[in-house]
Length: 545
Image 1 (cartoon, rainbow, N blue to C red):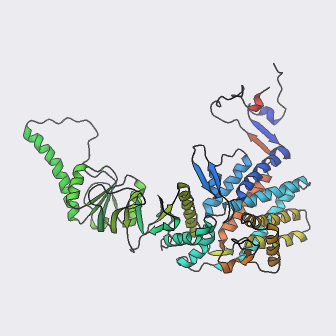
Image 2 (spheres, helix red, strand yellow):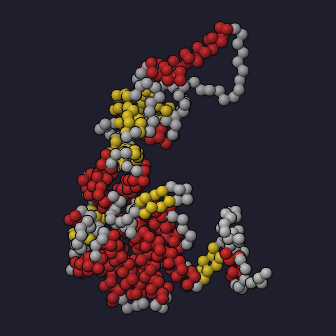
Image 3 (cartoon, one colour):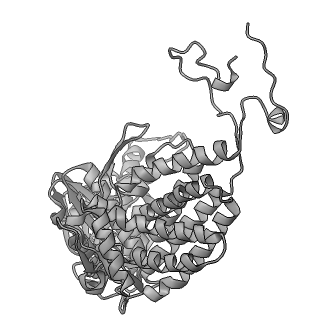
C-alpha cells in the first residue's frame, strides 16, 4: 500500500478534503487565461454579419445552429471559473442592450491575451490594471466625439429601419432590410412596451413570408361551429364556461320522478339563461380560461356565438389588452365597459398549423404579433432571437438616440487616438494603454477575416484613412477585394449605448480577472459518478495515492 502523503502546511491544510487550492501566477492566472483565450477564439468566427455558425448540442440532446454568441454561451457547459465570469459579462451585455455580446467577449479576451504578454515580460499587474483603467476612461471620453447621427424621430419607420439594419445584418446578412422593417413596424406604437410584442413561429415557407399582425395569433381553434365573426364583441372569463361542478361528494334525495326530471331541467335552464343574456348584451365571442361545457356550447352555437378556450393566464391577459376587454372571474353578463372589441376573429391555417386570429385591421392596437416563417426549427429560433434583439435595441434608442459609425470604424478611430496617448505617456502605464489600443484593432480585423478579406491590407488602408481624419471609414463587406467605405453614407450605424456598455463591461471583467491571486474550488456535490473503465471511478483524481 502506498504511504500516506501529508498535506502541505498553510491554507491547504485547513481546507476540507477534496477542496482544490491554486495560487501563483502560473496556476491562477496563466492557466485560466488560456481558457478565456480559447473561449474568445471559439466565438471569434461568429463576429460580424459574415460570421460562421456553431452547432451546439446540449445535455438534453437539443440542437442549436446559430452564430448568436449569447445563445452559444448559454448552452456551453464551462468548467473554468474565469471563463464563467467572462460569460456572465457577456450575458449582462445581452440583457442590458440586446446586442454586442461577441463584442464584449472578443475585447475582453484580447485584453487578457495582451496582458499575458506584458506579465511574461516582467510588468506588474498593478501597472497593467492602471493602464487599462486610464485607457478605458480616455476611450469613454473620446466616444461622444465620434457620434455621427442622432435619431430624430423614433416613430419614423424609415429612420428606425436604417438604424436596425446593422443589428439585423449581424444575424441574417441577406435579410437585414426585411427583418429591420418587421421590427420597425412592430414597434411603431406611441405607448411602446417590449412585452406587448409577441413572436409566433410557423414552420414552412421562407423568411420573406413573415409579416406583422396588428392583433394576436393563438395556436388553437374555436370550440363550436362558429369559425368567423366580424365586428366581434368579446367577453373574457378566467373560469370555465358552463355550470360549476361540485368538488365535495354530496347525496341528493329525490322523493318522486317529477323531482328527478325537474332537477336536470333547472341546470339546463340556468345555462340557457346565461347564454341568452350574453346574446342580448351583444356578445358574439366568448373566451374561457377553463373547460367548456357541452351544453353551454350547444346553446352558444344556437345563438351564433363563437367560443374559444384559452387555458393560459398570460395569453388571456394579452388578449384582454389587445381587444380592450376586462377579465371576469364569474360567468356573468358583462357591462358595456367590460366588453372588448375586435375587427375580425377567424380560424385559418398557416402552413399546416391551425391558428385563431384576432385582427384589428388598421384599428390602433397595443399588441403586435410578428409571424415568422422558416424551413427549419433552428432557423425559426435564430429569427426569434434576432427579432427580440432588435426590439431591445429599439427600447434602448428611447434612452439614447446617438449613433456611431459601424463596420469597425469606431474601434479603429479609438485605437488610433489611444495609440497617440500611449506613445507620449511617461509612466509604465503606457504599455497597458498601447495594448488596449491593439485590442481594439482586433475587432475590425476579425470582421475582415470572417469576410474572407486580406486582413493586413484592409487594416493598413483603414489606419491610413483614420490618421488623415476620416473617422467614418469602415470595412466594405460582401466584395472580394480589400475596400473601405464611409459607414455613415452607407447607413451602417451602431447604437452609442451598445458600444459604451460593451467597452465598460469588457474592461471591468478583464481588470477583475487580473486581480485574482488565489482560486479555491470545493468538491462538486452529488452522488457517485457513473461506473466506467477506471477502477477508481468513485474517487477524485487528487484523492488517489
